[in-house]
Length: 182
Image (cartoon, rainbow, N blue to C red; front, side, top):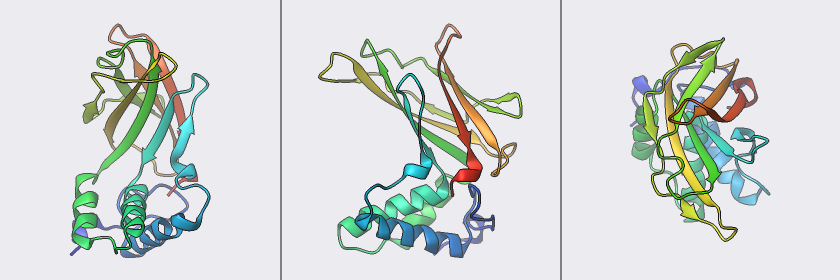
C-alpha cells in the first residue's frame, strides 16, 4: 500500500518530486504504453556536446520504468515495489550519467554538484563507477548515479548538473529544464 508520505500533488506540467495517486496511475499507464512506442524516456534524457548522456530519474520516470519492465513480462507492477521506490527517492532528484573516458578508472573520483539559481547544491549520494566498461572503440563507459536534495529545487525551474574531476576541473555539464518532464 502506498503511504501518504509517498504522495503529494504537483502539476504534471513539471517534474514532480512526490507523486499523487493520479500521477502514479499516469506513470503506470505511460510505462505500459511504452511497449508500443518507438522510444521510451526521451523527455528525461539529455546529451551534452562532449557525448555524455544523462537520465533525470524523477519519481514519475522511475514508476513508469518499473511499469514498463513489468509489462515486458506480462505482469502488473507490484504496488509494494512502487511504494518502496517512491520512498527511496523521496525528497531526492536522481541523475544517471554515462561518461566516456580513456582509462577504466577515469570516473571514480568525479565530484558532482547541482547548480540551482546560481548556488551549488552538494549531492546527498554519489556512486561513481570505479571500473568502467571497455568498449570496442578502445574507450571506456562509466555509469554514475547522483542524488540531490530537492528542498531548494523548483520543479518548474532549470538546473545544471556540473561534474568535476578530483582536481576541480569541469569535465561535464548538463542543462536540465525540469518544466519539460514529469
